[in-house]
Length: 175
Image (cartoon, rainbow, N blue to C red; front, top):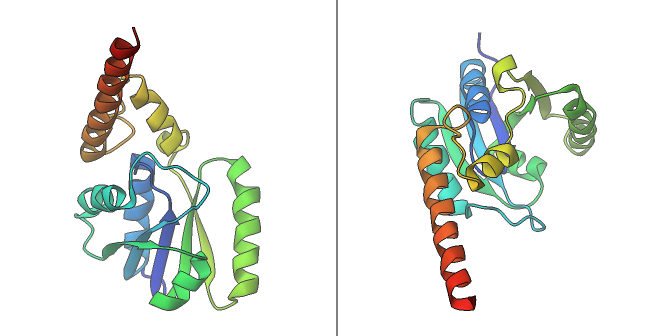
């Protein structure tokens, strides 16, 4: 079954997780074209820069022929209009996500009544996975291979390995 038009799945994807990829896969089966879009948040300090996240998503999503990876600034609803998207896809991990997501969906519907929001609940085995959890585990040298694609695991090892090396160097200079 294919639903109408272009769908946007937006987020920070810092980093992309297996939960994100599950939603991308499922959306790609529902919609003829899916744009996975990294949104810019001026108040957040991401672990990975936008070009890095774009590359991690491209590599992680290359098996999905109808999925594109993009980046946008501004309101999601404006971006949807600019690319002709008819649907916003949002994932729900827990009941606590629903209230926030519903509020955003209502605001988006008020701004653009012709763009619908579709909620996809995460699969049970991905319900607890978040990008912040993956970052936290990886920052302490933990194994995140169950939670993130291999390319992301490698990027995290490199990022936190570099951070550890810089921290050790700083400690040596101060000591």
